[in-house]
Length: 104
Image 1 (cartoon, rainbow, N blue to C red):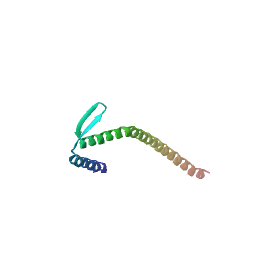
Image 2 (image 1 turned 45 degrees about the vertical axis):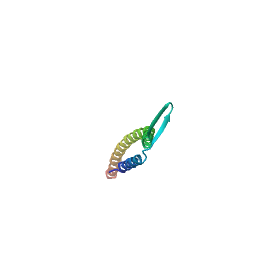
Image 3 (image 1 turned 180 degrees about the horizontal axis):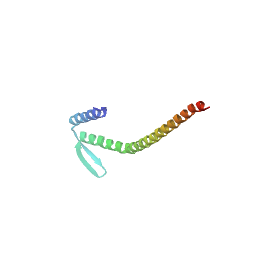
Image 4 (image 1 turned 135 degrees about the vertical axis):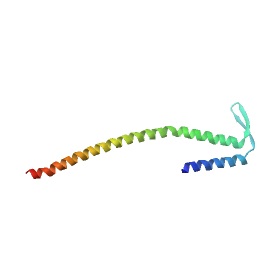
C-alpha cells in the first residue's frame, strides 16, 4: 500500500476524532450571511477548501512537468536512434580499415 494512501487514511482518522471531540456550535459570519454550525464542521470544510486550493495551484506545474517529460522521452528516443546509426557507421568503417592493409 503506497505511503500516500496510509497518510491520507491517518489524516482522515485524525479529522474524525477531532470532529467528535469538538462538537460545539459557533456562529460564522461571511459578508451578509450568518450561519450557526459545528466548529469541527467549519474546520473540516476549511481543510477541504485548502486542499482544493493547493491542488489547483499545483495543477499547472504537474501538467508542465508531464509535457516536459514526454518531450524528453521523445528526445531520448531520437538520440538513441542516432547513436545506433553512428555505431553502425563506425562498425562499417572499422571493417573497411581492417580490409585496407590486406589489400596492399
